[in-house]
Every structure is written in structure tokens, then in C-alpha cells.
Image (tube, rainbow over all chains, first blue to last red):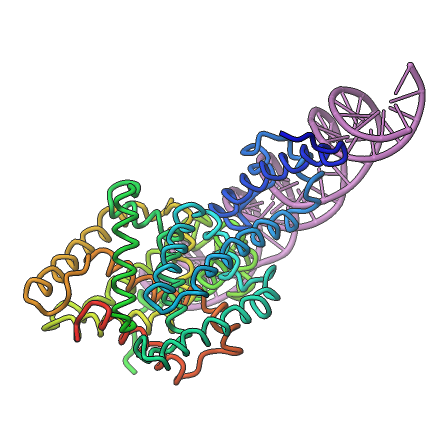
Length: 209
Length: 209
DNA sequence: AATTTTCTTGACCGGTTGGTCAGGCTGTGG
DNA sequence: CCACAGCCTGACCAACCGGTCAAGAAAATT
């Protein structure tokens, strides 16, 4: 273990507490929405006094913005595996896998994103119009190329993307409903079966096999 | 126009105002969640003084419960067309059509439902465990019968239902995101294309044709 | 050891919230 | 005409909200 410079060590306290706060905030925002969440509740969950939150994040909105942005980053990187795939079976299959894993590991993040978009995206509207739009047009072109190469049926690429987002995120956003119908939390096998089902139905749905 | 008895005329005022309040409440709850919504805002949107809301709906929670229950009713009846269908092409096709129409006509209702479920369903948990579970098992049996009759591929019925819910409701819950990427609101043709795309991909995905 | 920077926190504040209530209004039945 | 039940509402309240601040503790720098 190499020693860290003093100037970096100082920021460790900051990073530790910020992480603590962000984790608590993600959960509270996910369960109550922006309006329903209170700084006091986030503070209690993080084990810090409320005034300390305002030291690291001046306003409630600042904190919320950070939570949403962090999720957006994770969400975007899920498509990396899709890009250099030879065809839809590998590419879209991997994308479904990645998105299902995110739904499993970051269910609260997915919910905060959903809250934000339903709220007409007051905080991340610019991200939608720039980053997400650019990302989307890129994948649309990729899908169109696969269609032109005869590797899948001529489906509308945009609606395919919506279906991918909807289906995978549903397991996070509506996890409570699913678990209620399932009479309990998802096991490893349940997640495996869900992922396989989604892959099978969608890949066959787009004529990839 | 036939005259109404006097005793009924009075209840008409009640029904009229209740409808006014419920419409406003649906919109505000959808846009802000339970915690973020305020009785004052609902009152302003309904064009009534706040105290009047509390005359018809004693508490904010009572009003919210009514909004969620009303949506649940609409949501359940969407499957009526699915039941007496000869096979998945007609049955699931009609169900997709009905759910897409609901997403178009009642986007706010769908959002309130999403909010409620993400919030771990504090108000309608009993509905999930009784009515929705019964509904689900009924359709699962129907799908299993279609599979046994060789009318569709042997997919997992529950995950098929989740996919149907996720995909169709996505156009309501994430409508803002979709319209941002679409550079504007959905036209009649856009809705037609979306519905067709969903039908095509899912029906092929389950091997119905 | 002195000093400066970063971190911590209880107490506090103005504004907003859900909800109450007394009193007025309206139209129907006798 | 009166009486009465249902409807309406301005004014009000305790509770809670996000955010502030001053004073001090802890840590880093000199």
C-alpha cells in the first residue's frame, strides 16, 4: 500500500461522508420522491446530523442532482458491451444482461431516474436533449446496420430501445409488485430465469434467431 | 331531458365536485408524487377553495386512495378482451391495444400507479395481494393453455405479463423522455406505429406467428 | 506549538403544510 | 313563511420543512 499525499488524505473524509450521504439519499429519494423526501430522514439514515448534510450539499436540490447524475453514468456505460458486438444476438443479449444486472444491483437508482422523468425531468432535461439523444441515435444506426445486413427483422429501432429500457427497468421500478406476486424476494435463480425469459422473447421478437 | 328527482339533484353537486377534484388530484399526484403534492395546488387546479376539498375528502390520503383505486379499476378491465379470444394473436394483441390506449388516454393515472408501487404500495398492498394476484394467476393459466395447445412458444407466462405491463406502461410513465427524444408529442401516426411495433415484436417473441 | 483550514453540530428562523372550525349560504320540504 | 340539511369558505393553528449560523472540535500545515 503506497502512502497517499497529505492533500489527498484530507479529501478522504469528504469522500467517505459524501458516499454515506449519497447512498442514504438514493434510498430516500427512491422511496418518497423529491418532494416527499426530507433532509432529516436522509440525515438519520446516513447517521449524521442534518446540518452536516448541508455542509457537503448546500441544498436539497444539489444532493438530488448528484444522485440522478451518478445513476445516469452507470446507465450509459451499460451499452459499452453492445457496441463492438458482431450482431444483435451478442450485442442486444449483452445489453439486456447488463441492464438486468443494474436493475438488480441499483434498484433505487432506477427508481430515482423514473421519478425524475415522470416529473418532466426538471433537473436533467439537458442530459436528455444532449447526451441521451446522441447515445440513442448512435444505437439506432447500429441497429439499422444489423437490419441492413439481414441479421435481424426490420423492426423500428427506437421502439426496440424503448422495449429494452421498459422491460429491464421494470424489474427494478416495479420490483415490489413483482415480489408481491412472487410471494417473496427474487432469488439468484429467479433473476436468472427473468433474464433468460427477457432475452429469449426479445431476441426472437426481433427475428435474431 | 327528463327531470331528476330533487333528492338526486343534490348528490349531483357532490359527484360533479368530486370528479373535478379527482381529475385535478390525478394530475398533481402524477407530477409531484404523494409527498410533493399539496392540497392547495390541487384546490387551485380544481378551482375550489382548499377547505372545500377537505369537505369531500377528509384527508390527503383519502383523496390519494380514491385516485389510485379508480386507476386500478380501469387497468383491470383492459384484459376483458383478452379472455374470450381464441388464441394469443387475438388475445394478447387486443390486450396490447387496450393497454396502449390507456397509456395514451390516462397517462397521469399510470404515473400515479407507478409512484404508488415504487413507494412499496402503502395504500394498495392488499389489492396487490388479492385482486391483482387472482387476476394474474387467471391469465397465467390462460397462457399455459395456449402453450399446451401449441398456439405459442413455451415462454414463462409471468415474465410475459411483466413484459406486457412494462412495455405498454412505459409510453405513459416515460412519455416525457420519449417525447424529448422524438422532438415533440406523439401524433396519431406515432401512437399507431408504437402500438404496431409492440404488437409485432411481442407476438413474434412468443412465437405466435 | 502555533496557526490555519476543514469538519461538526445544536439551536434557531421564516415559510409552508395538512387539517380544523365556526359561521354563512343555498335550495328543498313542509 | 320557516326550518333544516347539505354545501361553502376565510381565518386560523400546530407541526414540520429547508436552510442558516455561530461557535467550537479535529486535523493538517507551518
